[in-house]
Length: 151
Image (cartoon, rainbow, N blue to C red):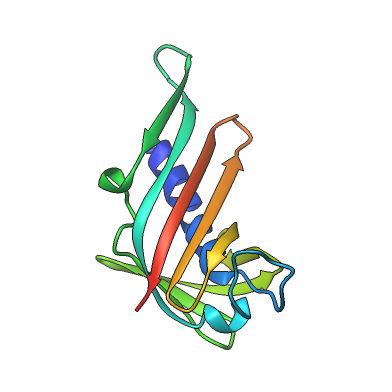
């Protein structure tokens, strides 16, 4: 269960970062326009891949597992971003609201009990790719990439 919660939290962060990357001008490679404007609307997760590393409870050894689209928990999830800095994350059976902010290539999503920061790797009017990396206090790590398409 702990791994699922970590994966969920990290996935959310990556998606948020990819969608919310804002900048104006040529300083940010990979973003074709103003990220604060590009992000407005609904974005569907179409691909997800990455890895996570955790300590096995029985053996005490560190295990690194990779996952891809076929294992993804967020495929078909919809992230909605509004101009007023609010948004929602929707997936079969649940909706969770957040506020968002973009600073350079970093998208921050703030939920009720946690925040997620992602890096926008690429973004245009139709497609976005974001990445996320996190290491918790127990040494568990996760890296994730989400690919989103504007709906």
